[in-house]
Image 1 (cartoon, rainbow, N blue to C red):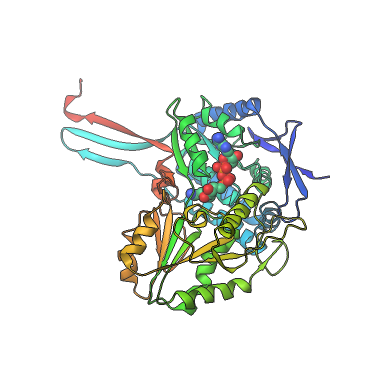
Image 2 (tube, rainbow, N blue to C red):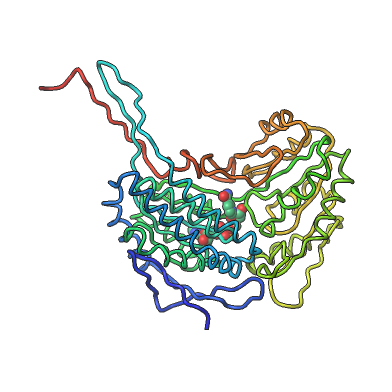
Length: 475
Ligand code: NAD
């Protein structure tokens, strides 16, 4: 029988008696069951968070840091068990799952050093004006299935560090590792400060519209982000939205083909392409297009697609059936339109597991669906460009604005181009690097607000200005 994982409400692990199945995408077997929560359990979790907020908001920086370090420690000490569980529910290969688990522990510890200091804007004989940051209250956190653990701590840690309490909802596709972490931290953080509940997608709008939640922090698709903004508008909840992307990588003619080919490959195909900041369109200068596209294709031919728990797997399955169907549809559309495939394109319908072969398209047109839409799968278009102005225009021609990259032997030129890209992050000669001390957020329809760094922490607070008129004391 599949293991039953419980929810964390008010310091206790609970279930509802009704369960949702969680499937391993590598073989479609049910590997766990999680509580199917509805309004009642949400109300309980919110009430616990509200009660805990009364005391948690008055805690010192050190108390908050200690709770966050306990979470970081619990993840690190149990990393071996957690990364295996993560692979079994999410699909990513063991090495990448290890990276997510240790990354989550490290990000948690690093973010637990962030402190929002008071700011004195006026200190004269007449007046003292001080801005302090106060916690917004109870936070609703909603996360997706591609990096379930990283995204969970990305919500929990800044909530706690700012003095807020949180009710977190994992994706119904990938709740297991998060619930195992819930069990590990249940007696390490004060009851009610962190609550983790599971349910179908429809639990999401209940959170967004809940009258006793003050802020929503969400990571997921742009379509859902828009619904959240709408749902949260009823009582003007604060919102942070980390949404989709269609990131462009630009490779200038001076880039060393041998040096960049493998990096470009992994910038697209890590986590089977299911990364918001994966390179989803790669523009290569025409002078090196043939040589570099062949070098990337050669890397691809040597990477094994398979069950992430098996040694040697580089690219795992797509995480769920719905996304698998979508990626297959994009491949079919490319075939129907006669676009050229450099590698892959043939999905094997026999057998179990949501496997899509590594697929690389050779210079499809700019309006191809595979170029214009976020694929979120192991399918990448390579495209030729001639001039800088042209490629900048093509890269910016998107409703998204999450991240991008420039690859060049001349870093100054890279920065010059980076400054012309309409995205929240641009890497020059690297990819997927995020820092706990640097704001991460999307421009345009890739997001609203930011996570990480002091900017991210501020989003869990209101500014409160206290002004004292020094020369008017009615004494
Ligand atoms: P999704 O929007 O379908 O679901 C995300 C979460 O929202 C899940 O927990 C889901 O249950 C919940 N949800 C669904 N409908 C809801 C509603 N109406 N109201 C409230 N909550 C609802 O996204 P997904 O398919 O799980 O994730 C993939 C998407 O996430 C991609 O577009 C990807 O680019 C994006 N993403 C963005 C970032 C980032 O930091 N910008 C990071 C990872 C993933």
